[in-house]
Image (tube, rainbow, N blue to C red; front, side, top):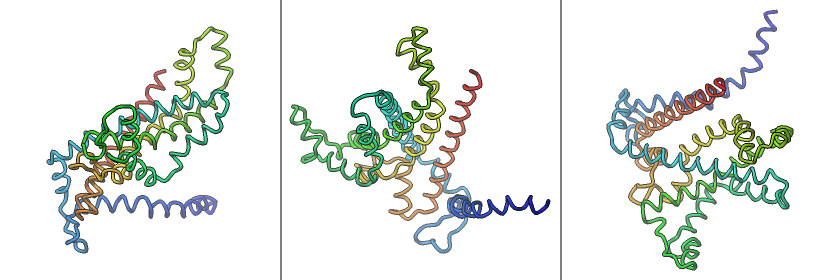
Length: 290
């Protein structure tokens, strides 16, 4: 009897050891580094300084500017990911000629390596030779300084990330749509429901179980997106396109402030943890209320 109780623990032990090695240990080590003055000069003998790095972060006005910019970056990107993704999924869920080909084409942005996409868009945003400005000039508009003006540089990285992100929402939504029983729409037709009523009374409520985890993941991925901004603008011009995670990267690998960068990563982790818990809790409470 005692042996039967031990066997399940022995079976899950290898998986638990791997999780501890690749997940929990780096997390705990990050918390430790965040409380030291580790840098290039004190890499082998860092000194424990408690919460000093966190005090520097929260007393610096730059952190709040970066946080505000990160929130805008995340909200705008996820909004367009969801809107475009759901609209395309609704379109592809219909029996249209060539819908299979369109489904394959829509996955291409998601399947292409991010650094290839980012470098391609960077060339397309070139002021003199980029495809976008050449197109604007052909239709009689002035070229836009995409990569030299702070506002347009931020718009450029947002456009790139929207193009990268909406296929994920399309695929997830399409899977959710195909799980909705067609009998519900047939019953709605019998009751005389119009397309708008079917969308808001049947489709969107039944898509919620797949959209909530997808949006949560989308927020986390977008909040932590480094590649697009780093490869297109490197945080410039004048550090006006930096978000929290790109600032964390430059602090660690350009200025070798490992302790400070690790503290910043802990702050980002706590922000996303609070958001995820709050968003999922809010969704569950609304579901119970119904």
